[in-house]
Every structure is written in C-alpha cells, then in structure tokens.
Length: 280
Ligand SMILES: O=C(O)CCC(=O)C(=O)O
Figure (cartoon, helix red, strand yellow):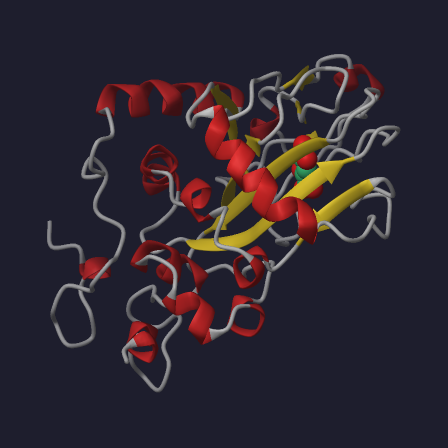
C-alpha cells in the first residue's frame, strides 16, 4: 500500500519519520507482540531492567540539581518535586524517550509522527500521600470507551517498591467508559514494583497514580507521555524548547517535539514541513 503519511509535500519520503511497524533496528518482533498483547489485555506492561542501573544513576546525577520546587497542588503533590521543560535543561533523559523498544510499541498504538506530549522527572519525597487517580488523556474531551489518544512510560530511576510510592495502576481500566474508580476499585490497584532501569508502559486510557511514599528516601522517576500527531501536546514545546536546543536532539526527538507533520494539513510552517527550520 502506498501510505501517503510517509510522503512529503514535494512527493519525496520525509526524512526521519517513524518507520513502519517492524522496522525498528535491534527490536525483537516477538517481544513487541508479547508486550502489546499485555497492553491490550491489562492496559499496561512492566518491562524489567530495560536499561542498566548505571544509566539511571547518571540521569539522577544530571537531574537532581534541577529539582527545585515542591508541587503546588494535590495532583503535583505537595511533597513531590518535578522538572518540566526537561530538554531545555538537560538532554540526559533523551535516551529514555527514544528507547527503540518503547518506540516499537508506540509505532503500533499511535499514528506515525506521534508527538511527545510531556517529559517530566518526578521525585516523590518521604511523607508524600498517594496522587489522585487519573488517566493521562482525560483532558481530551472525548467520550470513553475509545482508543487511547496517548501512551506513557514511567521509568524507575530509583527502585520502585510498595513502600516508596511505586506507580499504582488499575488493570483493565483502559476499557472503561466514563466512570471513575470507586473505593472497591482501589483494592485492585497494582503497584508497579520494579528495579531501577525498568519501565512501566501504559495507554492514556488507563487509570493510575503515584503511590504514597512511606519510606525514608525519595523515589525518582522519569515519565514521557506521547500523543497522536493530531492532538495538542501538554507541554507547549514550540515555546518551551528553543530551536538551538532542538538541534542538539536526534531527528526522532525533533520530530516528536513538533518538527514533523501529520501529512498533509497538521503541523506545517509556511505551508511546508517544519523540519526545514532546523537546517543550518
Ligand atoms: O510518579 C508516578 O508514579 C506517576 C505520576 C503520574 O501519573 C502523573 O503525574 O501524571
């Protein structure tokens, strides 16, 4: 099939667009199918130790000095520190957001040229209470049940355990209609217990939230959310990330920041592919 989504306005293939499913270098197709089957059934999957612990230690060293403020409300968490506009401040998390296995999953859930919706580092301090349950694409005013508009990763930079605030997920809630979780549903929450370097991947329709941190140490995570290329990103990357900074990123990340198009009518600049703006 001649898929027009991969072709630029000049009729030539777009550079750096997401390859068709099955073409991510070094990714085991059977693993992708098995992970997707779990996501289909439960709404999430935990991938243990996808990166070495040492990589997380490096990310922690680069990001810890940037964690300056406690959250401003119940959702951010009054004892939780977050870094927004991460790419403007450090490129340390880029390998997480463009990990080939994560991209291979996204390739099958979202349309080509899906976008980064937000990237955050989240450091939950001791004594923090559990975050209100939510699903990540709940702010798009579209009735449920429906396919997800987004998908997310939460990477464990520290070990995640039941005591320190491992993300709580509600299995199968991605299939729900417009109902909210009840007290009885809370009994079914599953903590994403996983060692540093692991990731929990889930669709934007899955109910979840950060757990309470009842330990004596902070729990650090990095989370990347991705959305359909027709949906508005949560972080306004055209304003938050400078062009100079975007130039330091890979073509994949540049595309996810917004230097890409959903052919032919979404995302153009002066009627043309915005990738041209990064050319020197
Ligand atoms: O930190 C976590 O475990 C989850 C955070 C989360 O879901 C959010 O802030 O949207």
